[in-house]
Image (cartoon, rainbow, N blue to C red; front, side, top):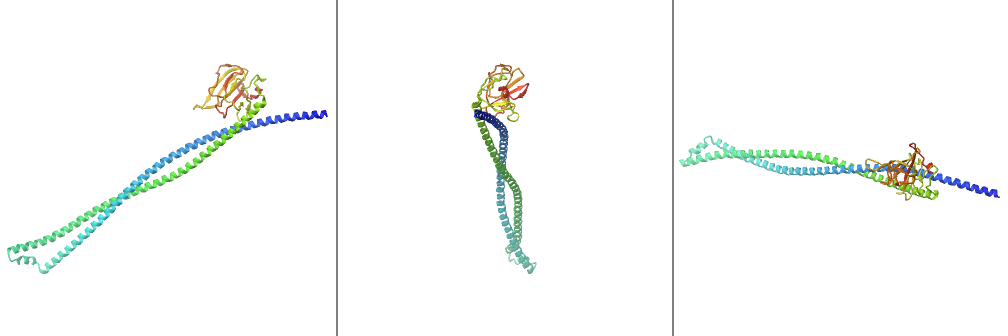
Length: 402
């Protein structure tokens, strides 16, 4: 019975060990999955930011182009209205000229009628004179009873002849003057019609140009609508990515808290002579946890601003900040490299801005604070990125911290 009882306890211990190992493996896999997902999401976030900026620039360009086109349309409308007013004025003038021409023609017709009547009277008088004989006027003169009567008769005959002649000339002259005035009116009407035709042609061209601008504005409105919808979708994508990153950060914090409480983390030197570069926090992303991750990350709730310690005594070879030309952080951000003079160097990255306490050439002791935890450079949250390099080549830091 004792032997069977011992076997059960033994099997129980083996089971618990296997379960513990399995949980560690699962946790490690989860961390790696989180790291990969986080890296992909960070890249998606950058890509989406670029798309948002491009969409905003395109939208601004469309709005600017539409505003300028609408100004051109307003200018065309003003010109079209001006030409239309001028055409209306010409129509009024042409209408008046038509009336004046009609009046002139009526007057010409009347003069022609008067001329015709006077001519007929004259012809009748000539016929009567002819029928009476060529001596008719002479008989009138000779039949005078006295000198006074002769003079009177002569004057009468002369006046009749002169009157007939002047009347015919007057009627003819008036007809010619009226005809001349009518011709002037016709010429003015022709000029006005030509001017009207020119303005109508320009107005038609302007209307065509306006129609083209209106079509272009419609296209710009459609482009603006589509671009605005794209921008809103990109912004939604960005919010979704941020929500996923926040969820991952929360998960990492929970796992870090669980790791810190369960691992009984201490900061005594390891067998390799190294201490952990930060107290109270465990590794949340391991060596090669995602592509090109040549170190380990320490993170967890409340880590922001915590002291970063020299893992081993040595000499500072680098203490600087990597920045872009526009002043923003890149890569490691605020970082420090220490040479331990045994072929190994350690690197501490993403420090808090302005928190570096050592400079190149300075000797540091093990456990000395060199910087504070930040999130500068290629970082999505507060953490310490720690590397170990042997002869300049990055290696897995984990064995050096055991």
